[in-house]
Image 1 (cartoon, chains in turn green, red):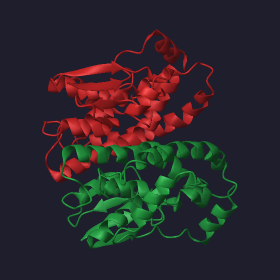
Image 2 (cartoon, chains in turn green, red):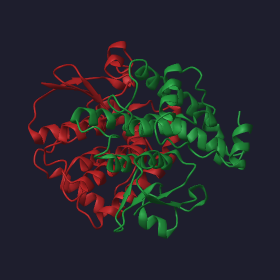
Image 3 (spheres, helix red, strand yellow):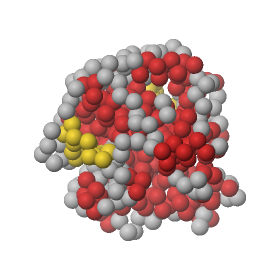
Image 4 (cartoon, helix red, strand yellow):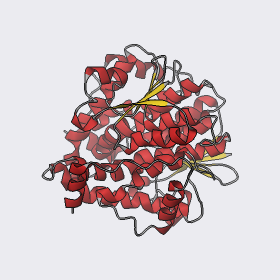
Amino acid sequence: MIAIHGFSPSGNCHKLRMLLEPLGQPYDWVEVDSPNGATRTPEFLALNPNGKVPVLQLQDGRTLTESNAILYYLAQGTPFLAEDRWARAQTLSWMNFEQYSHEPYVAVARFIAGWTPLDSPRRAELPRLRERSHQALAVMERHLQSNDWFSAGAYGIADIALFAYTDVAEHGGVALAPYPALRAWLARVRATPGFVPLPEPDALAADRIAQTA
Amino acid sequence: MIAIHGFSPSGNCHKLRMLLEPLGQPYDWVEVDSPNGATRTPEFLALNPNGKVPVLQLQDGRTLTESNAILYYLAQGTPFLAEDRWARAQTLSWMNFEQYSHEPYVAVARFIAGWTPLDSPRRAELPRLRERSHQALAVMERHLQSNDWFSAGAYGIADIALFAYTDVAEHGGVALAPYPALRAWLARVRATPGFVPLPEPDALAADRIAQTA
């Protein structure tokens, strides 16, 4: 059986659940407490020298890193990834957009709000992260005004990649109210068969989020 | 004929030349002066609502954004991208590493050094960007101690993606001396048939780079 090494509250890790659950593909989930140093141990660095979750481990021990590369690998031959070359290119384009222009702002704002102390100096980054988050959401909104999905006409791995952190953007103080097409897309994703929501933040993270201006 | 809309000193744009030149595939290059606002015009935003170069435009007008998605699209069916599913997954993993853990530090340090004024407040970011650059280069060095290439055993698009900014990391004050395996890989890439180097920085950028501590 395949194994996923991941931190459950991480959207990057949750992406893999969002694909594997509707596929009905069995997997072991190995919880890795990444905010508390579990990705910096020699054992973990042997799995991923870059010290990040998620990591896919095949039954024979081979490993694959980077959430979007894992999504692409697991989705081949399934309805979550088109066969057509141009459709795949557009799917990969949105997944690159997610990792470069979206996740470093939307996900990091959420992480700082919920998973750093209330007096962390990193909180000074929040205004800039939120501004850049809104730039990314505006690009998504524009696309969704004339498209239902990001994966070349059907629900697929680019939607999964973009959904994971967009759905919880408000944890980082990034309001979704200005984006009606985006909110309709979030609802469409939630209504897909086999959809699994990201776990709610634990009590400590929820308290920090509530206290973050 | 295909067209590339790009800014020549940009490594992200240069990646496409590094693939198209050895392939001998004809293309038009449309120069876009991105540091001076040319990616924020209505005309350019119609090509890429995210306001970034490079953009691939097909003869029929269709567009594809994100340098690594363009590389993947153009490389299919060529020796620069393996057919094997696992090899492709590893190639995509390194390309995601490049966009998330490498380019935002190595490329941004270079951009600030050469393409912002000497009194830019962004120069305060340089120490952190260099520290994170070295973390990325150390991950590459470790891989290259037991592998010749990043594209699953052969020179290919993951090498192109990683080469573009690594080769000019010293423009941003990121020394390559500590990485012998990486320097040997850079030399191997430069020796590939059809290799094209990134253009030298213009006089203004070169002067700023020389004056950056």
